[in-house]
Length: 116
Length: 111
Image (cartoon, rainbow over all chains, first blue to last red):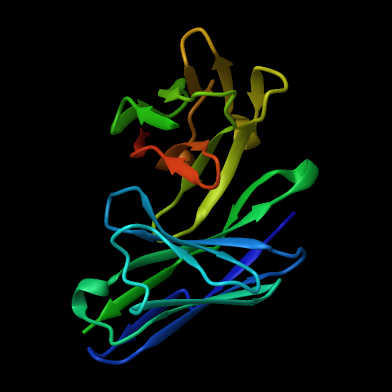
């Protein structure tokens, strides 16, 4: 089936540094990918939608200059948390839209970011 | 606009007993509905989906859900719970350009 590989699975960084999270579609082309943030024991919050080759669409309240999303190819989307602070610590999950007869959404395994 | 409500934040069952996780939806058109399961610190795994075909949808690991338009419900069931079913479950409706998540139901399974 369609698999999205997300890396790293966890990362610890110092305040003020930047962290990049990658999501790769392994056996299909992901025209549209989504980035979510999940706080402990809460549901997923959509941060942004990215379409290959164009600028990401950010949800209200999400700082686009802080959470940089790049979707330069049909198999790779990245989320960079710039100048990270402890309040950015969270679980980040990517998702790709599947089209055609396999309509649905497949999710990466998530990245646990801890900013110290 | 689409929305989804998961009626129980926590459900506890004994191993071997039935599981019922409740979900109601609101949609201005015929929706696509999904159930996903999330184990701790993991991504989401699709259990099953409804996309206007058969109203009784069978998924993986013995789960199934029935789409009831008259009740605007899409409850998830399993005849016999297993310890490995303990996880967070999300009912999700597909909006015009994104998914809309329920708040989740934590399923506990006791031996």
